[in-house]
Length: 173
Image 1 (cartoon, rainbow, N blue to C red):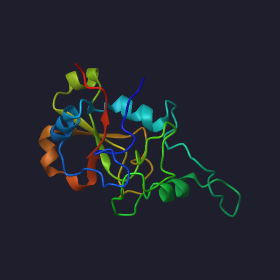
Image 2 (cartoon, rainbow, N blue to C red):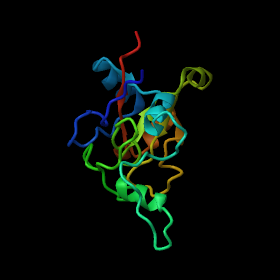
Image 3 (tube, rainbow, N blue to C red):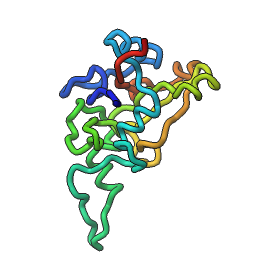
């Protein structure tokens, strides 16, 4: 069974997510809690609730435009504060929740993920950034199915203030 923190690290509702850490440090912080950094597949499964929906599953119906069509893009931008330019406390956007109850998994902060075993062995030193962040209004980049690959040598060039993480568990033995 998938075990993923409901909130971004430090996994407490009402607190700002931990940002400013590289992937190795994020991984060490998860390990110190008896967990590990989520893999890309685990993160995507929690985001899409096991389905292939590239967006969060809504907790309420979407607003309709004047012509009666559902405005998925506008609803998700509003619900997850995409493009707001500001990091918010974990759980502050109550409608920005995946189908399995994980909050802020799209929007808020990018999240470090480790690459799945087959990928990590063929691409050593690579990590993933998933979920988009509060500075994007682009639903391609801020979705369950999009991961940016980052080599460990590139980490120092990133704006880590926009990058957080969450832990999965328990840690590998």
